Image (tube, rainbow, N blue to C red; front, side, top):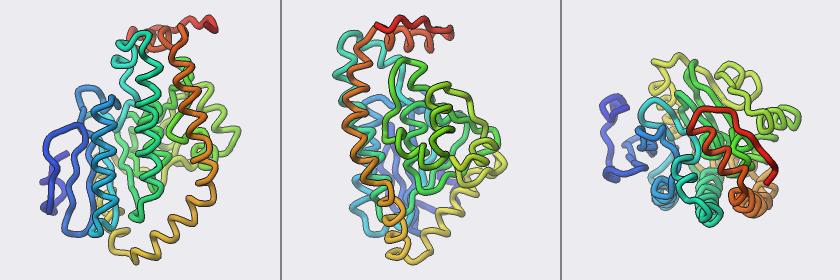
Length: 277
């Protein structure tokens, strides 16, 4: 995914790093997740990079809409399981910090005045991928895109407010199924259940997502910001209230043997054996 594909030269570009930001003349801020070698998995550098670009977007009055895309073959594979497993007994401290950054980013997405559009290709998985999807105002997915919650698969719980946002998007029963059984959800299934806004042909994803972002950027900014705030405020207090408990529980669970077993099983592509310890 290159700037040439966008057909609009950027006014500014934050240089190479795990999260890139370009602001286009039409008011669209394009955030690119830039760890393609790790399926855009969220490690601390990526999370801090996302926080930095979100802060920049929040403070720039020229931004009228935000588009989030992922470099490489996947949108975002969630937390970086290799990094998690490498932390050993220090994993709870790392998880506590990483979850805090992810929650801040998710909250900023919901609280930005500018509408946020995510364009999903490949996998959107884990707290990172599903968290960004559920915190976006609109989501466009390629026809071959797939979605996976994945937290309980590695003996952890959902984060980024997903325990609340997903329930509001798809309903309690479906959220229970998604979060507890971890099915791989196709783009068509995601569209039918209300997890995404639109499904488009894979080769049209970038163009369609930019077109939607530009349509939003051309709208009445104050009216769109007010509408967005009203809609998120309908569940916002619940999301904000749940995040500290998500963080506490995630850190606690990450210190258990089951979490290390779950992470190892994902890396080794095998079925985990959980003992409850």
